[in-house]
Image 1 (cartoon, rainbow, N blue to C red):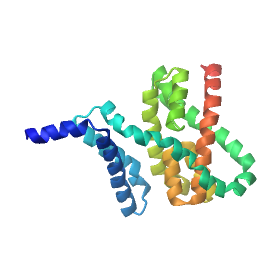
Image 2: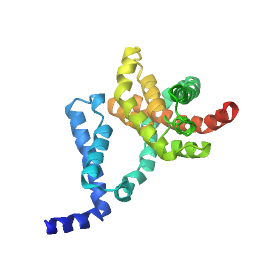
Image 3: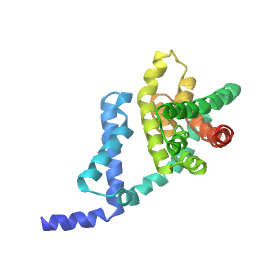
Image 4: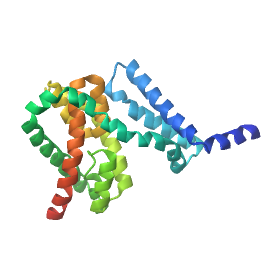
Length: 238
């Protein structure tokens, strides 16, 4: 037992352990997701998060220790986001034809995502700090945390809300759009990217290339629109 404990102490100090844990957890989620024929309720990110959480709780590993290894995956978020330009480039003709609709949709979507979240949280009695933190919840995490910090919110809470928003959007977005009768892939993808940023975009890319391209476009534009509009609106009304 002592030898096993010594081995665990050695492994737990290695960044590669938690990087490997992250990759394995996602592969488990992806395996379940594919076996379920891409059922959105079995989102691989959700399964991966739960798997990592259980592993950290069982082993008593602090989040800071885990992140020292997982930060390599975090670093790759930047290049992965830039790579979304590839499917977008393939759909550039459709994007040009839809320029006006895209501008109107992104402004409406950005405002709706922020205002509705703040209104619901306020109606439920949320604190001022929570309202500030929840406002940018539909924007990709690095941008949302920056907006939250600038407004005076709690970036760590914002990060949690952003991840939850992305997971819920990826899980329920397909059913919602089916119920509303939205069939056009570009509209479905744009809605998914606006509402649930990168996690929703990953789901859209797995389903249809056009949807994935428009979702990536919406994710980027929503981050820009929210960063510009939200601080202005907050100063005007609060």
